[in-house]
Picture 1 (cartoon, rainbow, N blue to C red):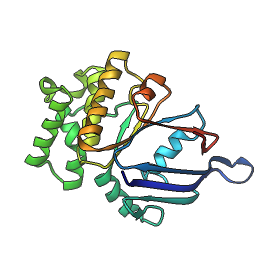
Picture 2: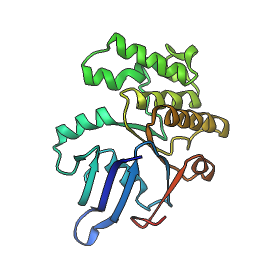
Picture 3: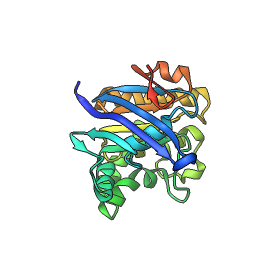
Picture 4: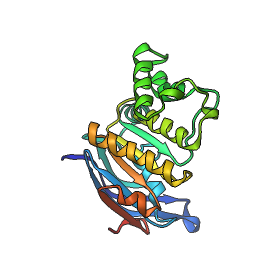
Length: 225
């Protein structure tokens, strides 16, 4: 495997003066292409801030971040938006589906935004992803009529829609029962094996972490294990 991304000496401080809070304190991390890693640590350790920076949704106060050989600290906002749309997918604890859209419309939304319209090829890929998620009978269902586990599988399909090299998952099974959580993780592991997509999964659940091949532990704004 080769390095997909590398961050060095990341510092992130919120606020100024006496009210300043340093959340990341010089964190360094390398993720190899094709890894499936669990991100662990107590609340307040800096996990969510790290994921937000890795997703190019926020810049650190200082430090370096390169992915696919591109310096993402020096990049302009428009460049980051384009990079994120092409190379990074997101799965959140709260699936964030658009309630007025069907399962398929939710999945193809990232590509429709990029292309400015829905295309036949996007619809075909969206359908294929939903079939792989075991949702063949729910493709045209309104998202509000799906179960929690089904909604999260739609969210995984949406994250994969543009064929990203990296998927960042923030507590993706946190609101699911154990059976649904294992179904979602089985699908993530399958995609990781078959397509080589890199997954970084933030979780407090040891059983979820056990399904990943690497553990990254964050504490007090640093990688501690």
